[in-house]
Structures are given as C-alpha cells and as structure tokens.
Length: 316
Image 1 (cartoon, rainbow, N blue to C red):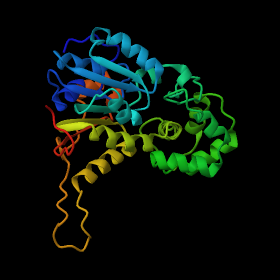
Image 2: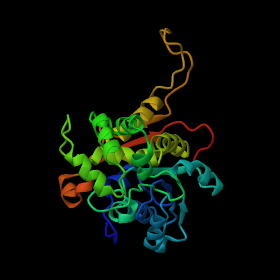
Image 3: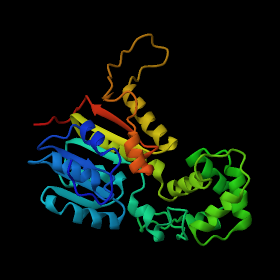
Image 4: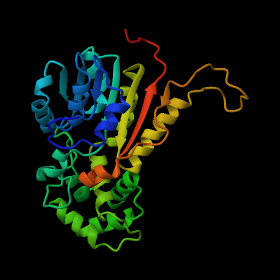
C-alpha cells in the first residue's frame, strides 16, 4: 500500500484483508476519524467501490473530506454518531453492504487537540465529548456528581478496583479546571491495585465512556451495522480495552446462539439457526513492528464476523 497518510491507521492491512475488500463493493466506516481506513478501503474497492463514513466529530469530517478528495464521487461522509448508521444508510439507499468497520479507539485528532480534554498530559479542558452537541462533559461529572455516582461510573466503565478511593479524592479536592489537575491528583493517590500504565488511564476512559454514552451507542451500532450486511458481508471491530471487547464478544455469542427453545428441551425445535460465523477464532493483534511505530495500537484487538443469513435481500 502506497497511501499518503495523515496518521497511521491501526492494523490497516489486516482490516482490508479481513473485510475482503473487492472492486465494486459497498462499505461503511462507522468510525471515520482521519479517514485512514476509509482511504485504503476506497483504494482497493476501485473501480466502482463506494464508502459511507460516519463520525460525530465535525473536525474529523473536515480532515477526512480533504484526505478523500480524489474519491469524492465514491464516498458519502456524514457528521453523525455511529448509532444512526442504519437510519443514514437507508436514507442514502446504501444497502445492503459488503463490509462495515468499527475502530473504537480515539483518533489522533481527539488525543492531540488540547481543547478536547482526552489526554491527561497537558492542561486540557475537561471536555471529552465526541460531538459538541452533547451537553454533558467530564468537567460536569467530576465537579458536580456525587461520590457514589463518580465511583459507579469509574467502576462500571473500567472495572477499576480503585474506583471508590479515586471518587473520594475527587470529591475532596474539586473543583477541577483541566485534565492535568485531575490526572495529577489520581497519580498522587496511594492506590490499592497498581497498574502498568498511567494511574489516571482507567478513570479518563470511564469518564469518556460516560460522557458519550458509549455502551449504549456500541450495542446499537453493532446490531445495526450487522443488519446492513448482505450474505457474505463482514463486520470488523477493533476494540482497545476489556469493557469494549466484552460487549463485542457478547454480541458475537448472541449471534451464534439464536435458539429460542425452552432450556429443558433436549433438542432444538425452533429451527432458528445462527446468522453469523466467526472469521478469526482468536482476535488479530498488531505486530510488534506496528506497536513500535504506533504505541497507541498496543492494546488493539480485531474481531471479524461474517453474515451467513439474510432474510430480506441478497446481493445482485
């Protein structure tokens, strides 16, 4: 691949190969970001390939539109949360599709811009919103929520056993005006369970997920994007932490076990069969070379499933 890059997309080759991108195919990138994966998908789906890209971040749409300028007649870029993918795809008559991608990691745009507040290394504003039309911010949570509410958010979205200790310290030391103040506080706490990464990583993850309602959004986009696939169409999902990966695995397992017979039945009589198959039994992970080039990819896991049952419409 000889593509001009604004950033290096995680597992780019693995994504293109897993989706089996072919000429003339229709694909959806539910997490457009800076357009790196989309650029490769469009490159390999020519001639005739089309792509629908979604992102809640208006800046990401602007960057991607510039990056994908040469594919402007083959791409549809929409500023929207990915949970609306089904609604948008049907409005554009962009169904069925041959493949869909979900890259659940933060983009470089979000991590590197101070005003977004996703990074704890600088005096960033405690925002953490993907889309600026959302009223809830991380600053509002840490400065206005109760100790129990903050503790529940940290534990629910990160399973951090230190959640109560961190929540108590936040209440005692607030208000917080920027991300560095919050990160420095967490770093100063004597935590029960120590981590290899920065002590504030899990708290920032939890706040981001709460602000953007990521669990509900992810559950919906998994179901809706899979429903847009034709027979043989593939859904590729890159997750970066255990909370996301558990949701993805639960969705896959539900698709594998669709029997609705009572638990005491000795044999299946409902004749409802699975509607998907797993393409890679074990998740694909970045190579050591990629991790060295892009340390942010180190925790990435790529899971791929294929639709094997389509009740409404097949590819022509």
